[in-house]
Length: 114
Image (cartoon, rainbow, N blue to C red):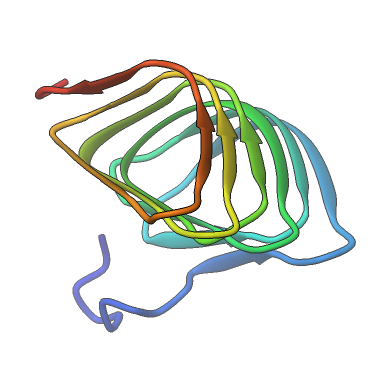
């Protein structure tokens, strides 16, 4: 990660109305509010916003799901955070998992190092 960027700086945004299919590899913090199909890999932070529609295998450092719908397995080296009104279908694997009361989750949850 670039040490000159503030820790909260978003380095890329797929906003509402965007649609992407394929493999996303990134450094820094990426936020997705649109539609994504495929694979997401990074050692850094992925933020999934309200209104997002994700069908992907996700393997990142940290994932913060603030809303939207995620279908697929999510693996994070550091942490997974789920907040209402997120809907997640798939397996979660991370050393730390936080799930807000009211999140819709269907799948298996493993809290252990990757």
